[in-house]
Length: 264
Image (cartoon, rainbow, N blue to C red; front, side, top):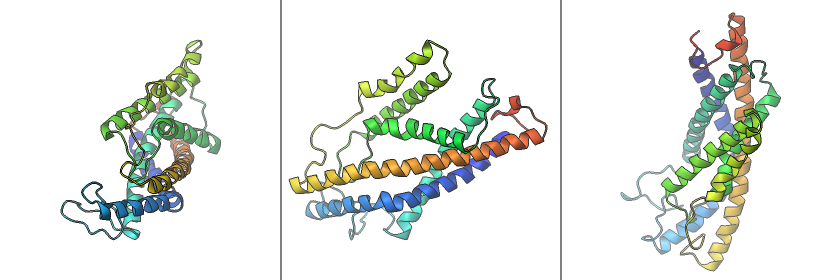
């Protein structure tokens, strides 16, 4: 069954891509988080009741703190597992869209080489990371943020609008094709949820200045890490889909059978 193949390859693609993300994060992202957590730990020691330090160095967990992985191998291992699970989910989406596209009349002759893989990966990066990050950049510890549910709703809205705009630009007939890109700017016209006030409330001016520099570095580091993730996802997903298409042709199945619901 094609669905079983997609799941199998999504697991493989997700594990490989999640490993790539973890490696890049180890050198690009995690050092910045650890630097920010040092300020978080200092603030927690000075005023524990105002700023909980769930991951502060040298801060012993209490009943209220709950469990958290220790720094070092344990934390890296849990980060890798989370990255791989996330990448598996994205791989399922990406390969399902690739297979569905292949099953359409206009996409029947599409090939999935490394160039197409890079294009699919770049598209996934634009939809799932770049467009939402323009309105909601990634945040470091101690940084003020809007309520989580508000950010999640806006993130999903930005993803759907970006995906719709790019799909319309690529597939919609004229004149709708040239109107579709308007969807790209709708979430940003509405505006992402942000709290009023300082970026790092309750911090001294010197500490706030240092944290703001770390926040800017973190955005760039997260962007690089996610580029690596999505290029790895695009390349490996294209390879996997091409293998599935080849195996189906060898089994005597036509291109119209390359749909996720088809049972071999």
